[in-house]
Length: 421
Image (cartoon, rainbow, N blue to C red):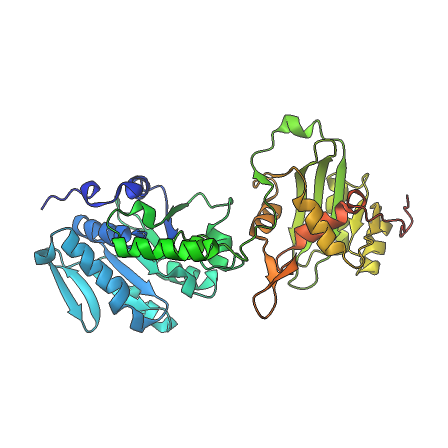
């Protein structure tokens, strides 16, 4: 039976269809708001593909008892949507869908019990497609990695490829791991990401559209999160001046006002050295370089600075570790402690937000890019905004504040160690 999938998908999913069909990507991430048709696209593709290829597939939710009324129901919808119900057998206990002409099938698993994932090995056809619905229900990215590895155990026959699909409505907080992973300018080359919302779905009911507009009239913030699928966080973007782009080598040749800062790591807390260029006349910051990681010893940190010839510029370091400052000074690094003081955090963050632009090349400085992009304001126990960023995953931001203290008006005057101003 010949089926044209292109005629069965919405216009807003034509590009995703081309991306999936190209076999360029292992991971396909579909995020967005309510009624955005992302699950409809994935389920339709899965049914279509299992009718064309000798493979099995797995549909997964975090909690097993949610499978029937979500992914199972959605895949049955796709079977009917393609007009092929006579070719599929539906089973309830356990849940499974079987393509009758070949015998390959779709399995359904809850990830609340890791032991259930071991049964994804099938003797007849390989499990080559995995769909994880409501990805944000999972607490960590490591859980997803376990499932991926349980499937990719063997090389597939020629002409077949593993394909993983993930769908979810983005959580509100930017600090959620799914937002940090898939709402970032930094992406792995094997990952395709598509964002959709109800505005691209012509089959949405008038009642739904009316409800969406009513929510929008009351709260634009809530509307953007629920219906447009945006991780709005606190509702106010801390740094609206971020510019993510490639910084050309010839631009670096013109840089002449370098600023360096250090935030000390401890245990699992990362050490962060940052180097910026500040175009004071145009009030533009350019991220030049970074050294970032956990358990980096002071000697190793000093060697990295020396090896990159950054020891000729002064570095302003967090004053909380005077011994580490002394260590770097003894190793030949020009370093002084940050002045900090009451209000310095809020002042520094506000100053950064007021620059004309903060230019970051994600390939050169991926951790600076990730932290600045994911920054969000803190809230109190009642959900009210605080006048400072969340004290979480902000090590390069803190380093940047130290590096630019003098320009911000917080002047460091006390040197330490044998090298002083």
